[in-house]
Picture 1: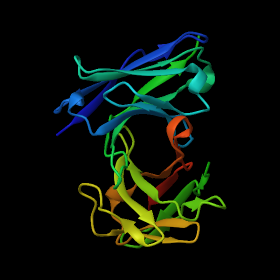
Picture 2: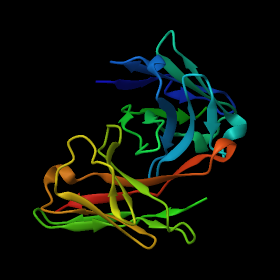
Picture 3: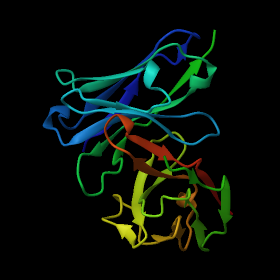
Picture 4: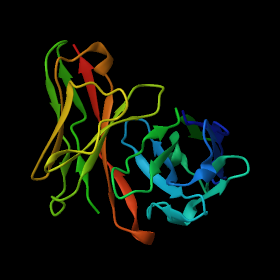
Length: 122
Length: 116
């Protein structure tokens, strides 16, 4: 059973870069057939999709965050990563990694990490 | 891009039924929507996808038969019958839109379901 686990600093200073990693276990990210996404949920708000990467490194980003986001994949380490630059308090949220199939069928997010809380504060 | 509207809260008594609503913005009546159950401290869990014809594809792993969906017009609703304590969760609906550099997933604000 594939599992995802987020890791990274829980506290980031304003204007700095938020960096998180999602480690994939129970399966190889290189096997293909999936997009690997980052999402977040600020307290009291809904989910926000940040962006995704496939195993070739091709990415899509939420237009609202595109200028500050970079998502990459490291197949040798079986993980993918998020970098969000110039953070402010508005970026404080629980961050999730998740995967969804590349398919013409049901391509919903089928596996999620448990989430990691990131606070932006000096 | 579409906007999904969900009421912030809902409640139902143990053993009763409840319908959680998710409404698409005007002009997106052909869109399908995914429902996710989200318990505190865990990642969301896929429930099922709904279009105007009802469920699309399959239910998520371990989702009981008590969960069903109905789609009509701009509404993509999730109904839970015979509510159990373990159904108390946040429920999110989401959909994807666009392609290429304009691709995006969008979600509603989520509904917190309380079991009384």
